[in-house]
Image 1 (cartoon, rainbow, N blue to C red):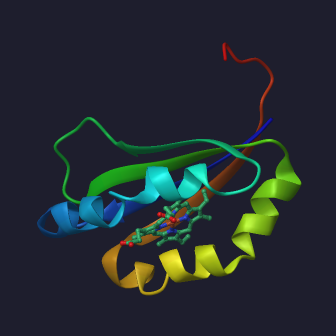
Image 2: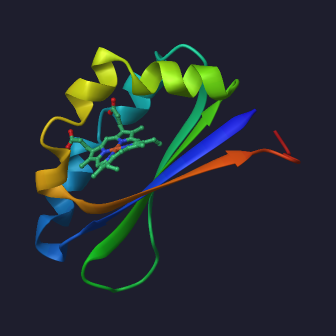
Length: 99
Ligand code: HEM
């Protein structure tokens, strides 16, 4: 199992717009080969900008890099830098999990 997170910062004034952009993401990520889980998380604090993390779970690293190179990734990120900033990507090897 492999996990990749991306943390973005969004001005509070644009938060609802960005949340709407992710509204169909769970269904889309369910269709991606090798993607075994997806969460879009909003940090529980009152900061402006708001801090969000997209957490993705994969069968293996190759499944993630295939999605990263896919048209779906390109399409879902066209203009993403206009809506959010500070994309901070972290990759993890899973040592233990409950599910
Ligand atoms: C580093 C630059 C990145 C920025 C600024 C960014 C920002 C965004 C934004 C704003 C959206 C919503 C698009 C919309 O409004 O329709 C999005 C979608 C998404 N992002 Fe990123 N992202 C970046 C890279 C990544 C990376 C490396 C990952 C890997 C975990 C990732 C995971 C996702 C996922 C899973 C979605 C939903 C895709 C879908 O709905 O099909 N992002 N991103």
